[in-house]
Image 1 (cartoon, rainbow, N blue to C red):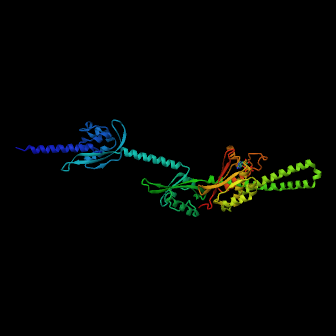
Image 2: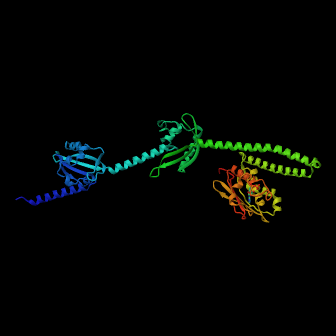
Image 3: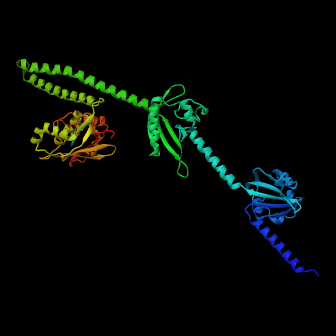
Length: 499
Ligand code: ADP
């Protein structure tokens, strides 16, 4: 009698192993097909169902190429057959359609022969990977790269990407167009580049070196050289490009061709100079005949008194008044054109000294009008032209006294630190004030708000003051309300202009 217990045990174990294997095959992420030599499907796991839409029961026991005709269309049949002939093969990426919902995806298959313990081929195994998501991701990256490349290539700005040692990795179409190089002439170029001028290399290196401290530098003006030798003024911005770990990997330079801007600025500068020269010459030449008129009317007044009579004398008085006024206007025009001329003589100037000297010069008016002029113990030093800065304070203090209806005009002078190495000064009064409507107009030459009989003057003072402040690269403005006094604010550069 044979002991069947052992047989039973063996069969159970075998069954358990098969169940176990089937479970494993079903649950793995890869699609798995097992087939015999006649290509009859023995196993079709869960993932294969998901990939193809075909259920186990539709496939098991059937001829693989008949139930999945797509395998034939994509040449997978050759690989399946090859595996039966003992070859292990891998497919390319295969476009594959879900049989039920018709969505399209990509798969990749590997095919192996399956052997028994005697090494005879008894069938084959196919491992199928769904690579749709990876493909989609690759596609999206590819598309966004394409868009980015298009944007970069259609930009008007010139783009140049280098590695950290300065080797050119990429340039855009604008770069090639403006400088006249071909892409192959530029890619791979190392510093010093053929489009830089030798005498600008040092500045450029210093500029790039600054990138270590700051990640972004901008508005660096330099001149580049086109392939045909043309000079092109550029304004450069440079950024350090970092990877996702925050490590610097490349340098992005964006350059803008500023030829037009430079031309316009030069044009404007020339026109302003022309206008200044014109004003200077005209006012200078106007003075000569005016002096003659003044001189001759004085002779008439003194030597011909009896002949011209009282009416004639009255007319001569009017002529004298008009010529004096006209001389005043011409003097102001001359001063205005003079203070606008470029000044090479800027030096450190003590504003305390400037104000004290102006105060001393105006001592008579100050006493006469019982002015209370408050000047702080300390006023800082600025970088500028002392004579012109005296004109500023003389005008502002003069106006603060003149346009003041109080029995005791109170004037306060002060300052505070301002941005970009500047000081902000102010001259404050308790005078008649200025309507908001005129806050800008009063700085225009010959603009006055009152008749000459009420407050005398030519209306050139504030225009001259503004021009002086602007030649010092400062700004001036007023804050005021009618009847509440005025504060004139203006900025001036500190003693050490670049300190
Ligand atoms: P002017 O003093 O010769 O009239 P300005 O150019 O100095 O010319 O001033 C222009 C105008 O601005 C003045 O006519 C006056 O109306 C107004 N203005 C200037 N300073 C003051 C001030 N501190 N208070 C009130 N009004 C002022």
